[in-house]
Amino acid sequence: MLADQQILRIPGPSPIPPSVERATIQPIIGHRGKETSALIQRIKPGLKPIFGTTQDILMLTGSGTSGLEAAVVNTVKPGDEVLVIVTGAFGDRFNSICKAYNISVHRYDVEWGAAIDPDTIKTYLKEHPEIKVVFSTYCETSTGVLNPIQELAAVVSQNSNALFVVDGVSCVGGVETKMDEWGIDVLVTGSQKAMMLPPGLTFIAVSERAWQVIEENEQARFYLDLKKYRDNLAKDATPFTPAVSLLFGLEQALKLMAEEGLDQVYARHNLMKNMTRAAFRALDIPLLTDDHAASPTVTAVKPADFEAEALRSVLKAEFGLSVAGGQQHLKGKIFRIGHMGYCSPADLLQTISIIEIALTKVGKNIELGKATRAAQEVYLLQEEV
Image (cartoon, rainbow, N blue to C red; front, side, top):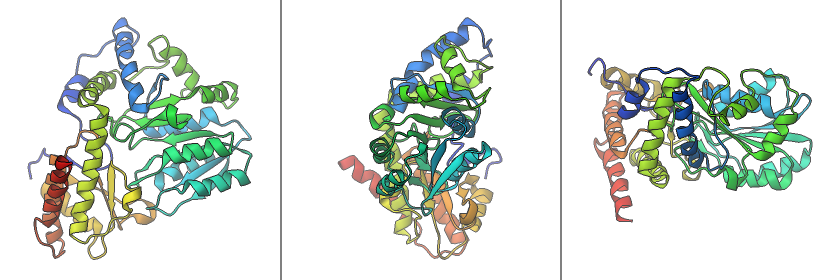
């Protein structure tokens, strides 16, 4: 292994395109100068199609979690009751944020590895008409589940007056997202996943309906007050010091996505999902999720006859390849492969081939090349369609 060669196949941070890296090291400019205003003005239209909205996308300097907290503190008034749908560790994070603000939470748990059944939420909302906001996760990073957000948005709008707030941190930019058409009120993502940037920015889109609630919300907030970001963005500015270098990178990342075309971006992510799943099926290694619930951006694998952590150790020590482990009660029981953003089928073929070698190192009896061949066949099949 080369000392400075690191292969990131975790569900964030994801690899950075070289042109984006180069953009981030441009000479710094004054964040209140005309150059930064012009930069923000150029960026604004490029974000809208990724979210599927006509609204301007707010850009905050902070992690994805800061975006989730902003979504909570701006939409929920003191005394409001909310529903948090928990399908894994990041649904649980929404719950923790709400609890930190002493919000009355109705928690709805779904088995880890399974997607939300919108019909069950329909019943729950009818039984609890007092719920003002529903919080959910689009891609649950901890399990590799992509929840049916379009169907869930319809259920929320048809069976309640609640706002629908979605954590899209680990998939927006990698999967089709139509915020306006589907009826999402607040949608959050982060820079370090499918958006192909380093960590440090969070993006938030807000519907007109949600703005009405935010305007009337008496909950105290300062740095995370979305009204400040909206009002400043209208003037091509930010209320506080932005991560200027990341904005340079964002402009270039948006150019790359536009050049590829969003439909092709989404098709590439779906192809990589199918290649990864076919590879492990070929080796009879169980996957945590079924095909219907599987995310195009991260795959969770639940081995039955070898240790997930042993495999991760070999991958890192011998090849500099990082895959993620499990979280909370799945710690040590699964490993997760990120395939989002600046990642291609070629990268996946490399990853799968390396994993095959590591499997033999941890004592798993496999036929070398079988998983790689399965992934290759998926790739060739999509070319014929």
